[in-house]
Image (cartoon, rainbow, N blue to C red; front, top):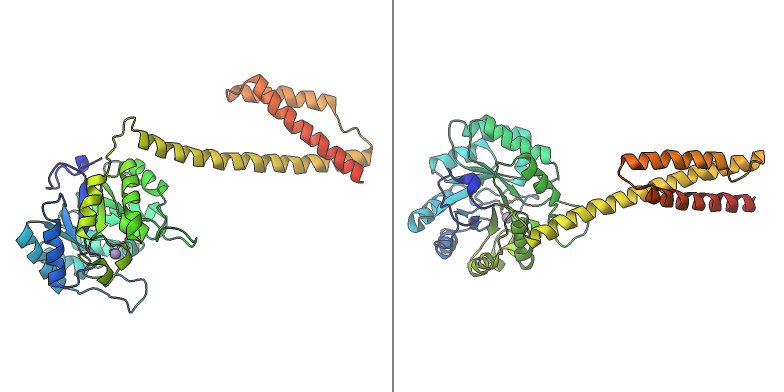
Length: 358
Ligand code: PEP
Ligand code: MN
């Protein structure tokens, strides 16, 4: 939690790691206004997209190279560090020329190992901090693989950004939060800092504070948030950008939790466990259903052969065997007997009902 994992990255040590700024750099004035409003507010770097990877052609595709000049000016006027998204080697080269302080690889690029490798090759020999956003789909292998490609190119300041995953289901969010993916990422890459991007998860500015808080409760190391001086007029992602004032107030209200016995961590863990229990219960019911189907087939055979429904010897063998298996799973004899008796009772009832139907 916080910046422990980035202690040699050259950022102030206190607080959570914060990246904030417009989805896209749109004009020099917009970049400077945003930077001035955010400087001195604990923001670790000013973000702005220069080359925008758009899902559909024809949307605003970014201002290109000249935007780097605007970011550079924002840096010299405010002292803020600056960062942008790179999607191909030419972007990397331009950013290195301008001495950008941070780069990130966007979700659409992480999806493609060829692109990631080309970016890694272009970065070889440098040690600029690079964040990798998760791919569009919930494929953790691509996410970790991208970080490995950059690490193999010699980069040591590598972080991750969780921005949710696309879903065909109708939902509240633009991208499903899919928390189990970053949670699994944290388990597999415990030394890699991870930010949450609530803007791209939510797609709507009114939901951002809740997701940002949830990320803090899940021990993310920081946030990347889209901030625009006039969100309604933004050329990209207008609905999800906060004003600088909204951003500052949201950050001020975040409750930071620690790993030990914090009740919101507890609540999140509990909801994860409940999901697991729900999934197991439905498996248990499905298995019982399958067992019933087999039992009914046996009932039909018994009817044909005029054999009794109740088979006392077989029933005794089942009970002895299941009680023994249950003991190996730390399930008490009483409990196993009760479960098996209920199942057996229902099986007999079904066999009898089928017999009467004939
Ligand atoms: C962005 O950060 O503006 C962006 C395009 O995000 P993503 O790659 O997560 O879609
Ligand atoms: Mn955006």
